[in-house]
Length: 362
Ligand SMILES: NC(=O)c1ccc[n+]([C@@H]2O[C@H](COP(=O)([O-])OP(=O)(O)OC[C@H]3O[C@@H](n4cnc5c(N)ncnc54)[C@H](OP(=O)(O)O)[C@@H]3O)[C@@H](O)[C@H]2O)c1
Image 1: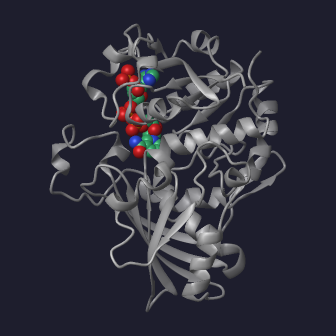
Image 2 (image 1 turned 90 degrees about the horizontal axis):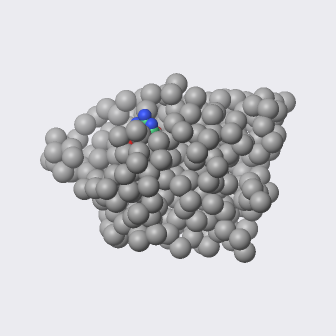
């Protein structure tokens, strides 16, 4: 099979580095371009990323000598690739404009950024849940006037630890209200302890914009296509408090939930462990065999013990308890830069290719 040529925009960042490790030896994709800011442009990837490389493996040989492009040179990058992943640290309006430029240059963009998450004809997809939203891409292409270019986004890292768990229960038991507190790793801010020493021995009960994203994004995931847009659902009613904790990788959520029809604990576990979606059906390269793992032991799922399950692509759940104010509470863990960022992006790209939304150029 001929491999798709892919570009990584924001290749020197925390999420960009994850993309590079996930794309190394990928069966369908090969890196054909790396781009970042003008600060990195013109340097080899090895020089540009320098001491910022924080992945556990060394920089793969196949990318070390690639000369980094300026992401704003859209024509140059577009000429090298079939599609791009985008994870950049820029102002929202600049990201929106950049992603649209790539789409208009007929390059599909799989984005980790939040800038386009609420554009009504941009699908925001957790592949196991709302793959049907990809159909909106035709309406988006009409608006953009493109033949093959479009933008598809993945949702925020914080919601991966509880939304799939709630979604798996919703159709039978009706999720009414959820209160969630997330305990989020520092890599979620693109940081390590060396680069963020204030986080050692500290908990910061504020992550800018994150509470709102954690409440609002699930409603778009639960939404429906109406005409040329995705109309967000009006329930479940979610309230969230997001907290930064001194953990390198992995977001943990404690979620309190009220149902229309209260299930038993056994029913919850059964729904979770049997839940699967399109990625499992299509056996996509980065699909976890089992999406939701359940742990019965006290103290699990702990972030460090469970974040890497199934290559960091599965969600770990446990701690189900009946609650005096809500029906139940539970705990979820997901790897924020794998399932929550680059891994989720790669899985979405695999789905888009498998479903024929992205074809190789020649
Ligand atoms: N970290 C996570 O867990 C996570 C999870 C979900 C979503 N995200 C999202 O992913 C995006 C990237 O996050 P990150 O943690 O990887 O950030 P990061 O480590 O700060 O990396 C930022 C990247 O953006 C590039 N960049 C900055 N200004 C630019 C410009 N003007 N033009 C082109 N490229 C520019 C940087 O290139 P230089 O090296 O040249 O400066 C670098 O490659 C953000 O939108 C973030 O919200 C992150």
